[in-house]
Image 1: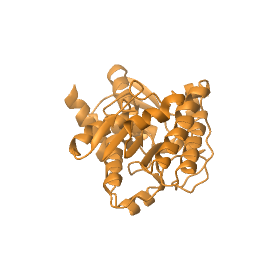
Image 2: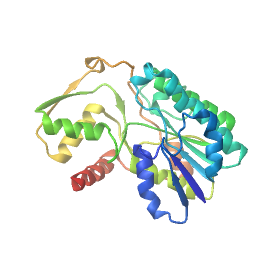
Image 3: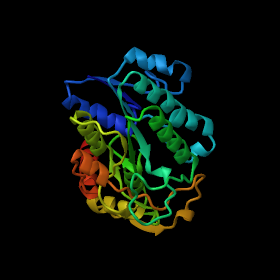
Image 4: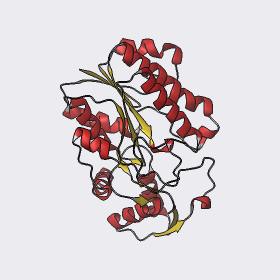
Length: 286
C-alpha cells in the first residue's frame, strides 16, 4: 500500500514521517511544497497521478490565522481549491483520503463540547477557508475521512509549547490568555490515531473530532508547562483583547471525541500525560 503524506514539514507531517518507521509494510511518499506544490492547481491532479497513492493523508494547509485575513487568495488555494482537486482525484481513482481540519470552523459561542454535527460558523478567514475545504471534500468524495483537531503542538515546528518554553527562558513574567477554552493536541497522538484508522478493517467515512482529553485555557496550559519544567517565571492571566490580533479567535473550542473513540476504539490520552512526553523529548534534544 502506497501512502502519500502532504505537508510533511509541518508538525503532524513530521510526526507521521517519524511513526512511518514502524510501518515498513507501507510504501511512504512524503511531500511538501518542493515535491508536491498544492498551489500549482493546474498540474496538481497530474502530479498526484504520477505518485498514484492508495491513501492520501492531507496535512498541508495555510495555517497562519492572522495573515490569512490579508492573504485570502493563498489561504483559499491551499485550504479549499487544492482540496477540491485532491478529493476529486481520490474519488475518481477509488483511493482513500484523510483530510485534516480544525476547530476554527466553529464560532466558539458555546460552553459544551463540540460534536461533529454542531453548526459551523467560522469567525475568521482561516476557519472559513478550512470549512470550504471540508465541504468540497465530502461533496466530491463521500467516502473521505475528515479529522478536526485543535491546539496542535509537537517537538517539530513552532507552536505554543515551544513558544512558552522560549519565553520562560528569557523573561521573568509573561501574559497568557485565560478566556479561550479548549484542549491541546499532541501531534504524535494524532499520528497514532491516523495509523489506527488506516490499519482498521473498517473504513467509516465522515467527520471526526480529535484532541487530547481535558478542558483548559491557554493560561492553564502555560501554567502546566511551567509546573512540569519547574520554572520560576510568573504567568499572568489576561483577556483575549489584551493582545491586538488581526483575526478573531473562537472563545470555546473543546471537541467532543466520542465518535472517534467509539468508532475506532481509540483511547485518548489526557493532555498532561502527552505534554510530559513531548517536554521530555524536547529536553533530551537539547
